[in-house]
Structures are given as structure tokens and as C-alpha cells.
Image: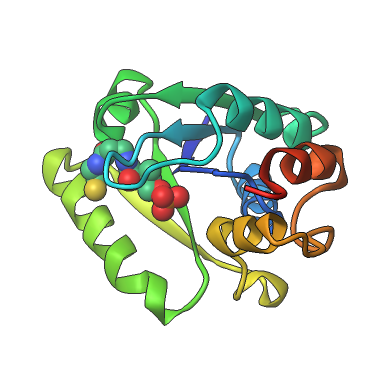
Length: 160
Ligand code: PNS
């Protein structure tokens, strides 16, 4: 049984994340989408909101669960006896930072393997911060986030 952890800020979850979640769910027996805290990156949505959004968009994927952890990813990884950390790579611009994180995590715990999934072509330009900016100025984000969370994102961000 192979368990994967897909960590991120998910502030908010986008179609890009959903694509990685679905593909990881097809590759591994169990996937935990982990809302992790990046202390250097202030969030727009609360942990509860982000978790609620993720629960709604992953509802139909039976081997996916959602969790929250406020400490080091590697501590959670060890605590849960996980096998793999999954990350999505959109472009070369993601690579340096993601590679650095993968090496740091492996350095802290030698069994921590990071598997990178290349983003699908439609998501290469997509990021949570782009989605937030578009929504804040009243733009249409329906092509970027699942319909089940669209209204909630818009009502929280529009006019802010
Ligand atoms: O979606 P993001 O913001 O690119 O995700 C980054 C995240 C949250 C996965 C990363 O910051 C993280 O793992 N935070 C938990 C704290 C930690 O373990 N930091 C050490 C690795 S740099």
C-alpha cells in the first residue's frame, strides 16, 4: 500500500491542483491532500475555508482525504509513515524552488522521496494568486476553479 502526501497552501484550490490530485489518486493507493502552512506566505482564505473547498472538490475521489498540519511537512510525513510527497510542476520557474524543497526534505529524512507530476498543458499558467487577483477585480474565474466553490470564492474576494 503506497501512501502519498500532496502538500500545498491551496489558497484556494484550482483546477491545476485538482488535476494533480486526480492523477496522484490514480498512481497511489491513498492520497492525503495536506494544507500546510508556509509561514512566509500570508493566506487569503482561512484554514477552515481551504479545507472545506478541498473536501468539496475531492468528494467523489474515494482514496483521497484532506488534512491540515501546522508544522514541518517532514514531521507529518514520518508520523503518518507515508511513502511519497507529490508536487506539481507547472514550468521551469517552479523547478528551482520545488527542487530545493525536495532536497531539504530528503536531507531531513532520507526516506522522503518527492515525485513531481508535470502540470497538464491547460494548467501551466494557472496559480492561486492569479485566480485571486482576477476575482478581486470582478473577472471571470469559472475556467480556473471548480463550480462547487466558485460562488464562495467570488463572494469572499470581490471588491476586496
Ligand atoms: O502551495 P505552496 O505554497 O507552494 O506550498 C508550499 C508548502 C506549503 C508545501 C511548503 O511551504 C511546506 O512544505 N510548508 C510546511 C513547512 C515545511 O515543512 N517547510 C520546510 C520545507 S521548505
